[in-house]
Length: 351
Image (tube, rainbow, N blue to C red; front, side, top):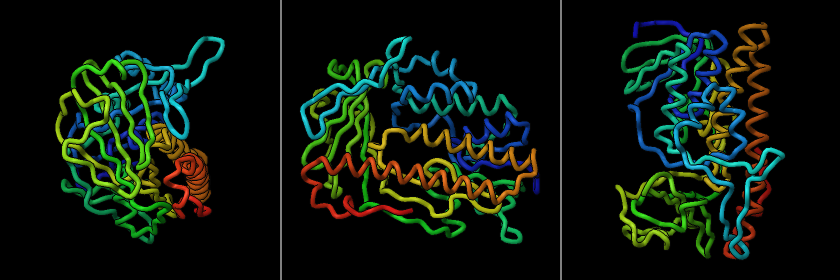
């Protein structure tokens, strides 16, 4: 990495949002670099991917590789919410049932990263970004532990860290109390979860369980009021299984950056806005936001479109999607009796 090296696009973070941005930009002939402070492969929670992601994977050129990865596939979910347990399928058409993926994030993220590299994206792992470079009120690059890199656009794909928003001191609004999703892994055999994942609500929150591979299962627990879990807590169906590693946690408080795009920068995926896992399409939203940013940058580069028009369009798109998902989540949570008195669920959301 040379000092003052110039790229069309620099992406901070090599997760799905950052990779989708890099793939889209590189496919348009732009010179792209990706920077990440961690190494690959790395452990991330398993992810259920809705069948609607398949056209997106085709567009990114990874559909066949994802299909060949051997991820478990399922027709829907078992749901126990305000009523009895029921199976909710994804849907079907003239070709048959729709199947989602239960992806192992370690492999899924690596597939996207390798696709970016195959298109000529320069990747710097274990290479921490320190601060953005700003000239004349525009982001024009980034200072890293290995040197200074200049760019026409800097993309933040660091997820819930909100790296660039914090560096630029961008206002961020919250729309819920603090919500911590805790998750972990177990090994053994749980035949109840061998076919489809399940989400079960109770008087304190909800629990998600799914098989992610041979003899390996994942769980996620979100408790309203952040009720602490007992030491070595496991879902009921996993009581006889062996925990793998420690219980981990992630801050899933509903929040959104007011200005997820501006002169020389874009925030993609969770770096722009965060909702808890019950919103059900975190990875799809991350990838689509990255693809949209790539198209907007190409539009500016190829047609001379005024940059501020692209940033305004992106901010409106992020805001609209966030508002839609907040509305749906509130409707979902208000079905649970314990939350009927929760004022934050009954407050109108404007972003």
